[in-house]
Length: 319
Image 1 (cartoon, rainbow, N blue to C red):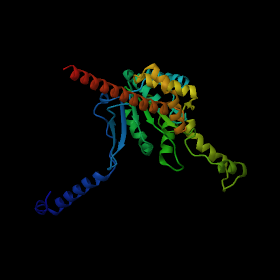
Image 2: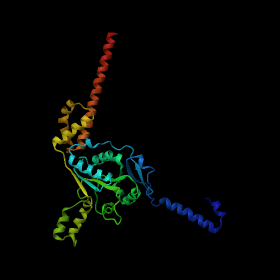
Image 3: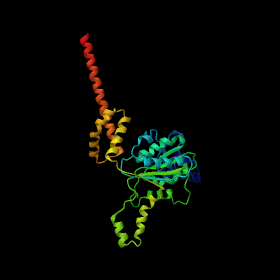
Image 4: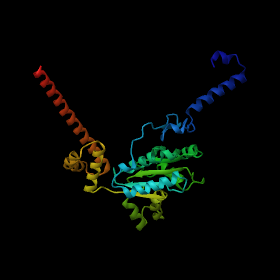
């Protein structure tokens, strides 16, 4: 409304118009309710994002990393536990929230993606939430609570520093809120820390000696492990042995079309690759396989170009 239009109004009408303009400006900066997707059939995975105006949105992940359960090697025990729990969940039976912990690069996140692909036809969906946005978990759960699909709230590389607000929000969602748990939502989290919060030697000293003025120092330690205990299923991953690592390398090279002879020839370089990175894991094996397969493909293309040039030369000599 222009100033000339306002001037034609009565004092009361101008006051009301000014108040409406003020309310519109305030609404633009206030946090907005979570915007639900137009259709849950658009994707099998979604990512929660916070806009600058405080509005949370669920964005579809158009290209979910391809991963099958059969692709994951040397984690059969872990794979069976996660697959069994996920199958119980999508079939409407009781299941647990899951915490996957242990060595880096051993397949924690890949296993969750593989389960998503395996059970998506049965209605499984995944919502990825960053640690910084965990305070919005209750809003996300409210949006999906009435849906027929089954939703896994996925938190990757989860860990907290003391005092972070997302810590208490996660505890309430897992077990502790006044509201009952939503039967179509589970939390799957990965972490390199078993207890999710840093633990210090001083905590043990304070517990034994009553230092730092803490009247009940044991309760400090209990608080630090209380979150991980609210996950009903703990699944631990361990570093690979040399033989396990080489088997995973061979599996990835085979999947990338490398011949058995080339796979056998790659073993020494695969060991050096792992030594340089200080880790034998599925991630390192996959990275090496991609590098080796790319170099092998380039060598084949080079030999093909040489053969083509030689063929042209022979044709020229014949002419």
